[in-house]
Image (cartoon, rainbow, N blue to C red):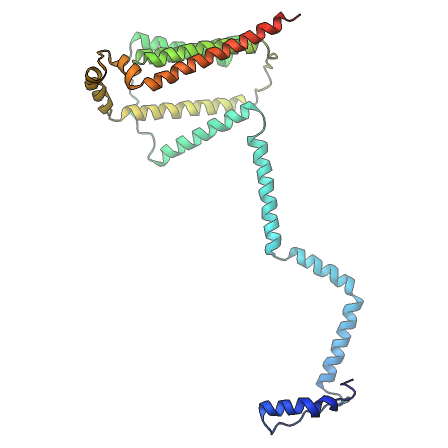
Length: 308
């Protein structure tokens, strides 16, 4: 309506408002339906032409714009890809770490220990230890040979019972080391628990299927390298600990306080039943719990065999 009758607004509303803002000398605007061929007309025709072309090719333009939008960088799309990558990584590490295979769990645990301990020691200056051969008695060599023979039997045998016996020999050798170096309480605990473990493993081995000699051959070289690496790292760590200066403050304290505080001249017994009574109670609890577990397993097996 106002395009056909422009004077309804031009002279009654637009011009007075502009004059009030800019001054009285403002030239009034002239509105015409036809002003000849000029730049506004050409731009208007170009706009209409461009609109008609876009309408005709609208579907093709939509497809091209959609394709360009998929290739363009977008924070929303980037966030979605980050979440997708995180989900894929979580699924991958779950398949590797939580595979349900006991061998994989052990391998990952020991590999992490090897990398963490070995890497830390290397970063702190390496393994500075004295590797000279100490003076060893015959009993030391006997214990070393016992442990070595038990380990070799476990590695080379194809029988579960023989492998369990080899592990038991290693455990007995460790108990003998405790005895040689003056820790009879730890040695007794180790011996009792080792005996129960051998018995329990032997009972369980009778219920397990036969070993497949060729089932794990592909993994044995890698397992052997990891075992050697763990053994070397732990041995070097122990050598570093024993090579350092010995802090004798606790030794001196127990020597001087054994008789005045606990009325005992046998320092080892006083430490076990007085100074470290709670620790000794814990060792006793371990032995008792292991014995109860063995009794429950053997009793359950006997009850099943007695059923008609």
